[in-house]
Length: 230
Image 1 (cartoon, helix red, strand yellow):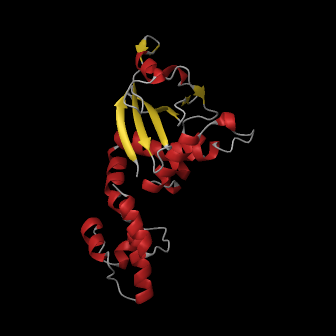
Image 2 (image 1 turned 90 degrees about the horizontal axis):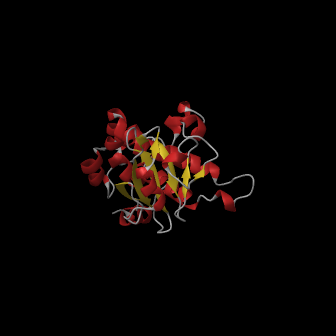
């Protein structure tokens, strides 16, 4: 389960955190800096993370890990007083090597859960010099930037994310039905009607038109996946 809550200048507890409250009052060049704080919780209760976005343009300023410490992108420390500067920038080039790699960036529920886990656990002080947590944190920030920054900004991105929600939700089910159809030669398993009603998928051809990655899902896998969803 991934829970998302949007607050302005608030911490994940619903009360203003020191950094977030200070950020709401901080000034740069005589202008007040206000933030939108997006609170995320993954499958594990320890996977709690908050993203800080500048209210005026929805750019990511930084994030807070599970120990309630803020990490700010270089140049955004003024918005999160007391934060630790991140060792990388906020552009897609910094995070995933450039915009050319954006189409291959996994999005959806699973990647969002992985991102929440990576950011919640991020603590460079506990890592060796190779900074093993940096890679997952960068990929997680890129994925969440698409959902929290690009989607509200850009109508085509928002529509694409919105239109793909039903596919994201039923990916396990699609995999199961395609695998079953290939095994039996007939489309029409226990979830075929569900996919027709919820995702507009009427057969194997429709399924393969929207899915690039298929995995072998059992009936138990699908039932478990649906049981975990809110």
